[in-house]
Image 1 (cartoon, rainbow, N blue to C red):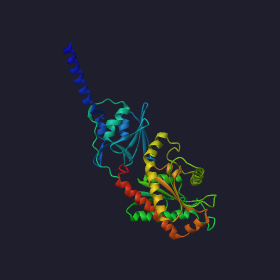
Image 2: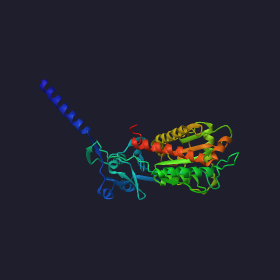
Image 3: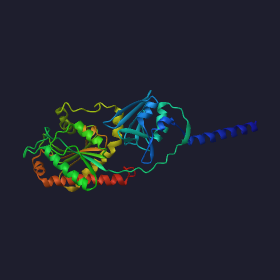
Image 4: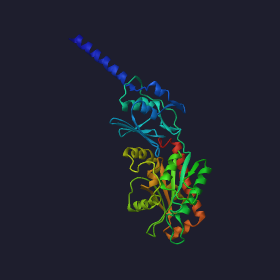
Length: 375
């Protein structure tokens, strides 16, 4: 009996070691030769066109060009991914890819590693071989190269109007936006303006400009107003649920220009699927909050105005951009003393410098910490 027990122990030990060895390997899916033939190398990494991949395996594919997001479905399984992002949603759960999806010549490409490890699982494909689970990642470059500067209002949409000098928000935001853009350009940043003259630009178009520019940041410039003559100071907003009545009222005012152009077409449903917003918000909210904090710190250090701080709201231009985005309110035209300051071009120069200073400090820290991952 003792001999049989010894044999049994040895067999169990061998089986356990075998399973342990298998645990260091993970099953993966290898696409067929016709799919592999469509692959191309981008920045030294092999990528496959997602639409070709989906059509080859009878997978439902939906592409939203407005937010550069793809949804692929097979049965009850679903993957959501976004061009330029290394984060995907698999049946609602977040996961990091070792390489981001890439938009090339108007077509979205996914890394072969995504096909091997994630796509095969969702389509229920059979495993063809095994590879080690460890993925050796190449260097990922964290640079901020392009900023979209959005001058609020314009054309037939004047925005707020001052009570004392009758200053118009649309003119002042354009002036500040140009000053801000010039400073950023002198620092080596490419600047894309949503408008550079007194033109009415619908809110959906502003978001579309930001999304198509392949920019790294979106900064919308506004001047505030309130029924209360005593309110004054600088505010910086990023996307989240409105937290107070003042924020909700400001949302309604800033977003009111949507109704001014009923023919302005939105390229995607305003009631986007929750998972698409979940992906975008998860990816951008932290960066937007950080950017808002850096700008507010810079303005506060400049001691030019009262600092009202970082706030949250759901402005249209913030909701519908797929990059980190903030909206600054330089001051209150409804406050007589602050309107007097806003009338001075030198004051506007100084405020543009302080906002730019916050952006540049954010850029430096973002790049130093590789997207705040080592902060």
